[in-house]
Image 1 (cartoon, rainbow, N blue to C red):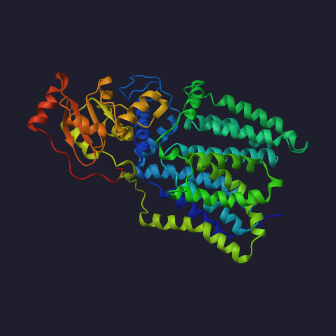
Image 2 (cartoon, helix red, strand yellow):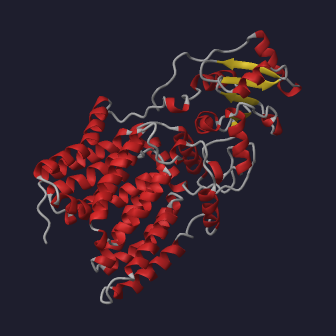
Image 3 (tube, rainbow, N blue to C red):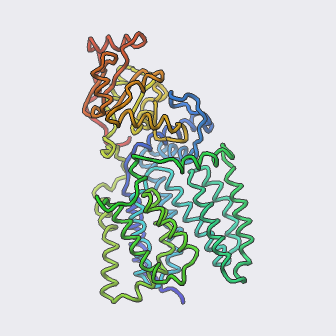
Length: 499
């Protein structure tokens, strides 16, 4: 059956809604800063870091920067056009993702309604995760992998399979999520082996392309060591990190609601045609389970669901009345239009840095450090590490930032989290290292106890951050300046945009 012609106005409207959802999130979250700083380091040194130059906790510790190419491209975008360049870079990836998926959905959709539904809701969910972070490369890579396999194996366009090695090699230099593509491709090939014999003639070529692609993932500055790092990160318990939490019903967040809607819409058709499941449906099913277990994987399910939805929705549409189809269409389009309205309130390509979910960034405390040249080793809350690197490196080195297990051992991560967020912190933690300054939120029990201790001197305090130094001979000058209040005061305004 030939798919019906999708009107151009509908294609334009769907594309506009999808891209508006990807455009919506323009916040400088804690990780954006260190991505920029690392990209700047690579550009200035014309080398990929193999040892960590940023932290004093484990100086020159071996570092697997599995996102080095993304960091460089993000920084070059910023250096060329400022925040607008970063937005343009992000949207170029988003446009590529939409272009990959839209053509395939248009080919499979049994009606214009199915075409629209298959794209708008998944892209609304994707938009909640489409930040200035290298994960967006993995969303694009997953879509490209599935399309190469669909076209090479299902449609008989064998030459497309030759793109797998190139795709995997590029992906391995952009983001550590490339094993997802390797695993998805292997699962697809295994499932394809159950097809009729006349279709399985392409299978050997597929396995050869996969094997060459697997070897191609070694074409990074870290070669095989990159693969040794991946299991360590996957198996580590990312406790306390919001994006790693599982799907929940109470309290029901927007991400939870969108995921539930997509699960219901996709799952209904999936169950109705259970005797006609295909490879892409099995992959979407596994990614749905992964998304429910950890919201970090929900966008991967959204990408896979786009390719699985046209067939599923075709079965659902056949069983609904005209009014039922209209109600379903309105329900799934509503979130997309709501995001569009919110986007129109701030349409310019600005990047907002007031991340209230993390308590904001210590902009005034950083300005105080710069004004008074209080440079040295800074023991900090991990959530602020990237911002402090971007603002203060190389004059200051940090204790912790969002690079997580690529640099820091698990015990050091746990120590930092416990110090700033535990009701019974170990107050000796900063002094186990050559610490010159400690910065944390005033609400932290550890910061309150250090401020009350005669062993520590408060240099600066505001509603967002507190800055302390040890009362010892090495920091005597700073302590005396604090006693005499000989400080240059920072500016009062806090920047709310990345400039």
